[in-house]
Amino acid sequence: MAKRDYYEVLGVTKGASADELKKAYRKKAKELHPDRNADNPDAESQFKEVNEAYETLKDPDKKAAYDRYGHAAFEGGMGGGGGHGFGRGGGDFSSAFSDVFDDLFGDFMGGGARGGGGRQRAARGSDLRYNMRITLQEAYNGAQKTINVPTSVSCAGCDGTGAESGAEPAACPTCSGMGKVRAQQGFFTVERTCPTCGGLGQIIKNPCKSCGGVGRVEKDRSLSVNIPAGVETGTRIRLAGEGEAGLRGGPSGDLYIFIDVTEHQIFRREGVHLSCLVPVSMTAAALGGDIEVPTIDGGRSRVKIPAGSQSGKQMRLRGKGMPALRGGGQGDMFIELAVETPVNLTSKQKELLREFERLSEDNNPESTDFFSKVKNFWDGMKG
Image (cartoon, rainbow, N blue to C red):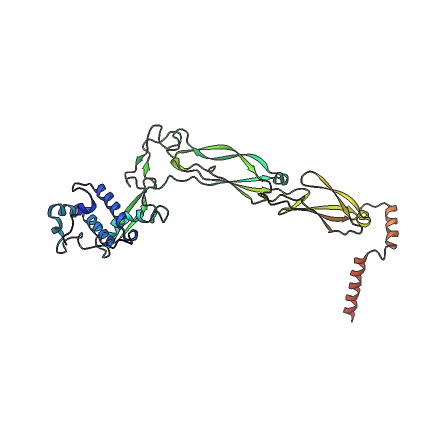
């Protein structure tokens, strides 16, 4: 079967430029790739035909020979265009196929199987971190804080483009606006970020005087931050788009607020629960009674101490702890007693305590039990 004219295969006229040939090839190869035409038995042969045509016409010497002699220029193994086909790896097939590779698989691999195949988006700004200290009461109630953040913001003089007002960025001459350059190494084509434009595909010929062409300037910003009730040390609050401005109009990064809740002079926090160490006198612990304790909301609660309470005894006040972050109820508060031994006793107090001790031989069960165990231990050692 006679071969079709290569220009006809690509759907271009004989005087088509290199860019027109490349554009036509990419379009045809994308349409006819076998992976996208599983139900078309002729797709592979048609794809081979398109590749063979482009392999010849993209090379100036081969194109000149074809324009003069047609297919006869490559008969008898004289050239690299005919007979290579899809699966036999002749000439610069890898380079030709790389032109369409990104179009074929970019949708599945995030915009380019080999890193984009084209110009990168303007560089995104960096994320920023701000460490914020708040009190336990602020963590309980929630708070509205105003912070000052030194950062980079979009340049107002050029609207973030980096070009002087009225000027437009120009396509990079090194990569022709693609953002990447290619180099042939044997069978493989190596693609790298363009060193001239840094992958942006554009250069600034007339840079903005305010920002020097980067599209952003240093500036302190004042931001209002809402601190929700229930935050803990280590809680992270994200403010989308409030980080560093991107280069040349690129998207801004995010600002992350890291919370540090300071220690309280009365309450100790454990998750949503609070604990409070309350000292009580020896007589109050022995006789029992009521005491008044503070709560984190600024109120006060009465707690009944049972007679004979010991240090370390705990009592629970339900619902008097911290709120759970983003709802979910309220924690509890635990009262822990610390029985206090009196100091700086007067002679009369000492006399009364000695009399009390003489009359209290049977009123200290823990001491009696402990020293009984000690006596048994010593007796066992002697034995």
